[in-house]
Amino acid sequence: MDALSDVLRAVRLSGAFFFDVNACGPWVAETPEGKRVVDKMFPGSDHLICYHLIMEGECWATLEGEEPIKLGPGDIIVLPHGDTHVLSTAVGMRGTPEMSLYRVPKDGMQPIKISLGEQPGGAPARFVCGFLGCDSRPYNPLLAALPRVIHVREQLNGALGAYFRAALAESKGARMGNHCMLGRISELMFVDVVRQHLESLPAERANWLSGLRDPYIGRALTALHADPARDWTLEALAQEAALSRSAFAERFVAFVNQPPMQYLTNWRMQLATNYLRSANESISSIAGRVGYESEAAFSRAFKKSVGSPPSEWRDQRLATVQ
Image 1 (cartoon, rainbow, N blue to C red):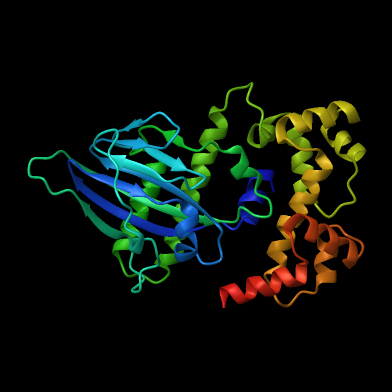
Image 2: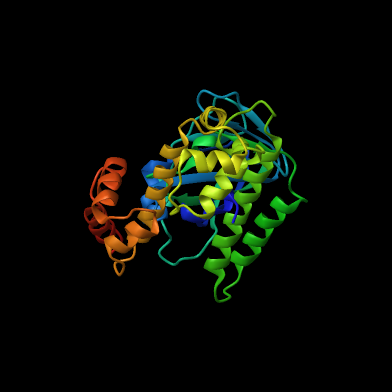
């Protein structure tokens, strides 16, 4: 498994939440900060990713601290960090988020249909808003490498547009398994956007994502993710990268922004939290699965990284989802 796929699996992407919005200008829609609503939309997740596809018409997307983005049919924007943002017919408009919408519908029916503005003769627009939940803690290297906003142009007739059309078609029926299908479609859309973003990164960009395509760091990351429990050393990882120890360590930090062995520890803790979600596996067994010879050594590393011992973390997590 490649490192990107491994991370996407381990951070537990889950997505099956859609708004189907019809608007007639002037109109404004403001999305609240993700951390304010993620627990209502995706219980058990701690991070919200938002995205919008413009099906018809035009609008502006505004994110504080960023230049406004003009969106047209087929354009997609993704907000990987769940920042509050505004879609509107004109720059500078603000609205008040309807917080009651950002929770799982009691009847389970999606997409949630919304109408904005009803001025006769106003310019019409239609867009789809989607949401994904995922884990940002204890360690999600992908989120750290993504910008605050990703803009993908004119995808209405491409693969990304097909995902949205499939999601809307699936949501209109009452076929068994449609909630699962919606989640998978949403996840596929996000993965495709990430891949397009990765392919568009300039050669001089240095972060975790660009490290995946680096001929040296990419090999080391692939090897590490393929066998995280191995007794890795700096020398062994440098050999995988076909570099000297010093050259590898310097290059790894330049891309990943932390030393190789720290990255390994952080990633092991992310895997450990996934294993701990099961009440059936012992702490000692989990310690071995993530590369620790003793439960005590694992517990010390886990507490240092996460802030609480593994048994306590699991008890709190299980209590939260019950």
